Length: 230
Image (cartoon, rainbow, N blue to C red):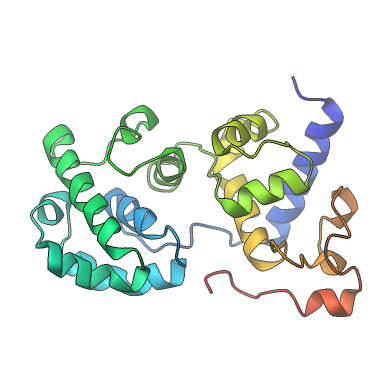
């Protein structure tokens, strides 16, 4: 069991971040589980803003797994090209859609153990879909989440799965999805990989890494981003 003091400090940080980002949510646009699965795959190595820009045209042509499984490869590549690595992503989307049609009648399964068997779907993507499309609690360990979990002293793990389990032990399961949003939003807006805005950080007093970025409030304030999609 984690130390009581660590649990208490971790939950305090999350409560303050929840107050700081009351609108925190998934920043990828989607209307159903299939769309969220696809846009999450597309979000690798690019911004949510860029994925959201290609989403309307993509799903206008391929609204479901059956349509995407039968997609023309060149046309699919053309539609998602702005997200980068479009050939590899096209391959993933074709295989993913075909697997959904063949194994799940075109429907996205709502269980982690099923989702991670799909081509190109790891635990991070599965937890995004479960938490945001199915309401099943999950921790999404992206680069922001992992960085902040280590800065906050919640874990020293660098492996995403080990990080997921270590941080999950500090919080009630029902809080996992929103915890993920809070850390990702804070990581995108304030606790940057380089030059975190320590001087204006709302959780600075509980952070063992305070001072990694400028502590002067004026300098720190200039580092804050008002939105995280850029």
